[in-house]
Length: 116
Ligand code: HEC
Image (cartoon, rainbow, N blue to C red; front, side):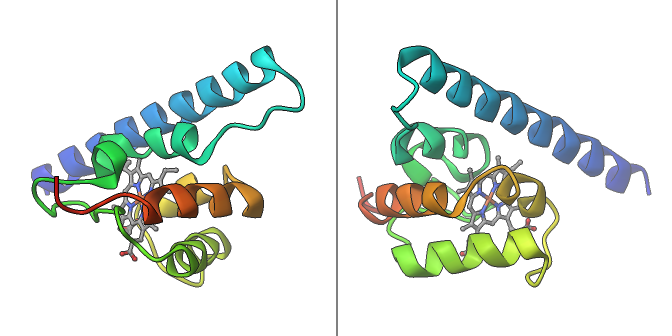
C-alpha cells in the first residue's frame, strides 16, 4: 500500500517535470522565431528523464527509445494519445504533441544508436 503510493507520487512528479520541460521547449521555440519549430531532438530531450539521454538507457526499467522504428514510434504515440494502448504515464505525455511532432521525434530516436 505504502509503496504503491510512493510510486504514484513519483510518477506524478515526473509527469510534472515533463510538462515543464515541454513548456520550456515550446517557449524557446517561439522566442527564436515564430516559424521555427522545435526539432525532434529538442522535444526528444524532454523524454530523457524516463527514457534516458537520446533514448538510451543503462537499464531497461523504463523503455528505451533509441533505435525504435519511426513508424512503430508514431503508432505507439497515437495509441497512447487516443487511449487504445493502456499506459500509466504516456497518455499525459502523448497528448502534448501533434502528429508532426511525433514524426520529428520518431526520426530523431530512430537515428540514435543503441550501443555507445
Ligand atoms: C514520466 C516518465 C516518462 C516520460 C517523461 C516519458 N515517458 Fe514514454 N514511457 C513511460 C512509461 C512508464 C512507458 C510504458 C507505458 C506506460 O505505462 O505509460 C513509456 C512508453 C513509451 C513508448 C512505448 C515504447 C515501446 O517500446 O512500445 C514510447 C514510444 C514512449 N514512451 C515515448 C516517449 C516520448 C516520445 C517521450 C517524450 C516526449 C516520453 N515517452 C516521455 C514513461 C515516460
